[in-house]
Length: 321
Image 1 (cartoon, helix red, strand yellow):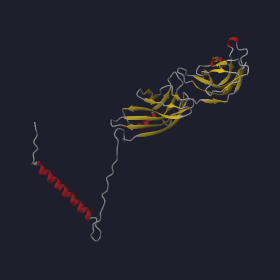
Image 2 (cartoon, rainbow, N blue to C red):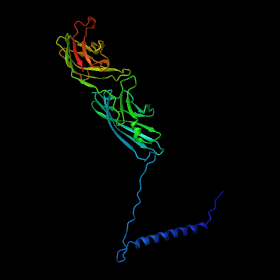
Image 3 (cartoon, rainbow, N blue to C red):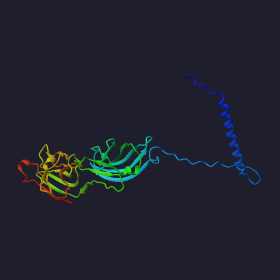
Image 4 (cartoon, helix red, strand yellow):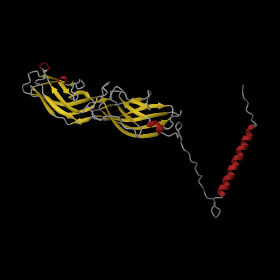
């Protein structure tokens, strides 16, 4: 069915506009007449602007909320700093959350985080959180992010207070970095140890040039630490033609609780040592998995002749404070 527009309405509209226009002219004239010089000359007056505020929909005031966090924890060869958190309201009343994180690689090799972190909101894991954890060059730094979406942007400051970044599962040694200003980081910083010494067996000399101890970041090793001894290997003049093999499993350690622990393959030493040769590979670490907290007296043994027993095997004792 078509609709016919009554043309008789149009003059009414024009008259209304004309009246409004006349009223505006009258008001303008009154305003200008009130702003004349003493000689009657009109003075130009700029209209007073009406203030406006751009309000984004969604949150209480529609504005993004940025929290500078600046907290550092340690995990899997990285110094991890949560830099800041940003909550941006959307047009549906919800919000997008972005957490900026800096990863400093403390190892010599290119390295990527071995696990996917978790974002806790209160006590619940946010299953929709997405982590971008970068590949980082040895001794380098790179930035990553954690992002998620929320149904409500209300009280963004309190929302940030409830958030915690968690590295590792419950069966692992975890690092927890809370975003609340009053929250304390739950993490153990790796420690460098001033351990040096020499182990000599036949034509092989093992020089311990340093050490470090840190929580184990291997799965299901909660309560265990990695004790890593940095070694240099020196071959004597009497090393037979063709060389002699040096393996990680020639090393054992007696721990403070009296147990004997073999070196772990996570320190995969496999070198062929020739006569009068020195092997000084910065990645050669003998790694022992020891009980937490790792403090106390240790005795390391090197024995390339395990079938003959340890009678001729050299030892090195030290204490971890």
